[in-house]
Image (tube, rainbow, N blue to C red; front, side, top):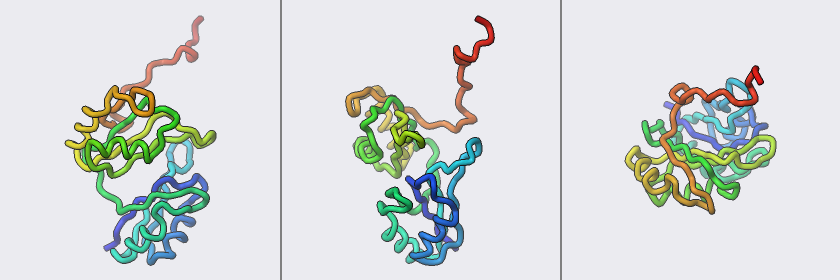
Length: 181
């Protein structure tokens, strides 16, 4: 039975083959997949690698976690199933907040399994929002209580449970899309 690894913070140039070749240095790779955005056809900046044994997984984490792959420091850890209600959307982030600052802030409320500030692929700047995944829905609730409308790096942030795109309300029509003037 293979064991799945999560590989985050991938550069946009990493494809399935490059990911496979990198992780084959640590052992037998049964699959390597970079997750692609359906709309744009571009990488979402993360992927999954499956390896045959726990020893190979440990070697891969040791070899690649917080190491550079294709010019970018990657995050590697054993993939965990998504805990319902534990993923948070964090909005109104200041431009100075990075993944580490976000993680450190939310660790005050409980165990953080991932923290990612979403970056614009062209400018490399923060888009002003991110996602934090807590170990449990109780820790997520504590994080909301602790951080919603509270200051982080000089700005009051918004913290809510993340929802699937299909569950979000439609965006209202924008004024520039009007056909009558």
